[in-house]
Image (tube, rainbow, N blue to C red; front, side, top):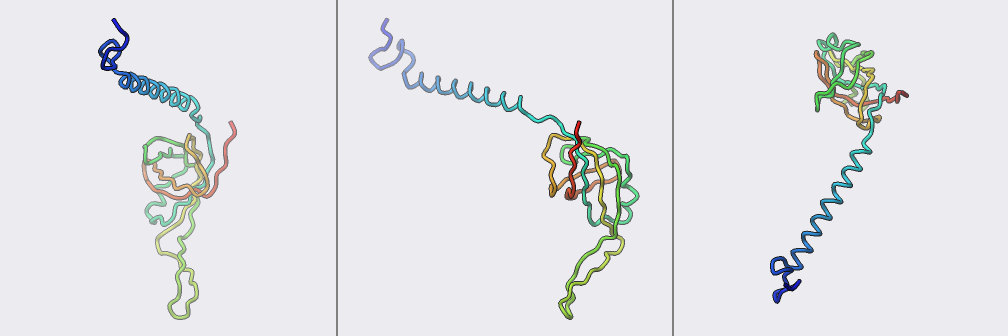
Length: 154
């Protein structure tokens, strides 16, 4: 039996183009597996951080629900990420332009507060100042921007 027949097929069943396509698919699949296996092995380990999250415009009734010592959950994946260590409340201030003379006027917003939540979290995500973080506990949910990050050395 000949290796190639009159139509260019190997052993009369498989053409050279078919063989090249099969070899290409096997090579891509093998390369993809090796690449993904390498990236999975290099994934980062969890890191601990002390962060300050600025939570603005809190209604007065929510002040009592934010209690230090409670477990904090990341709201998107609903996974525990750490503990609320402390909270500091300040009156919510907004700035408005006076329509009479165009000056900037600072006014307190009635029955609203800004809070700085001091959290100790452990995550493998990137944590940086300015990141928007959605969190929750069993009594409240909210979101704010991280304004301070301190990496905890293990």
